[in-house]
Figure 1 (cartoon, rainbow, N blue to C red):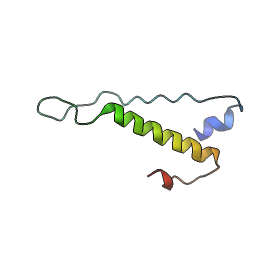
Figure 2 (cartoon, rainbow, N blue to C red):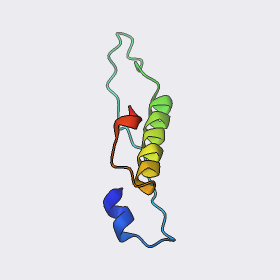
Figure 3 (tube, helix red, strand yellow):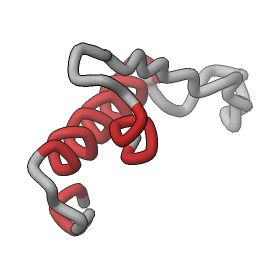
Figure 4 (tube, rainbow, N blue to C red):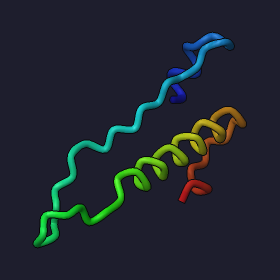
Length: 65
């Protein structure tokens, strides 16, 4: 994101696509052990936080944990 922000003009927007890929079921009944939608939303929030930190000029990622 940082490299893109340096190259992009001020009117540009970055499309971020969260693709978690296929999950391998670990349950005996072949059900998923996690909620893929919830996981995707968590990755989205992390990406938004990274982007906000970069816009603010922060180089620390400790606030994202």
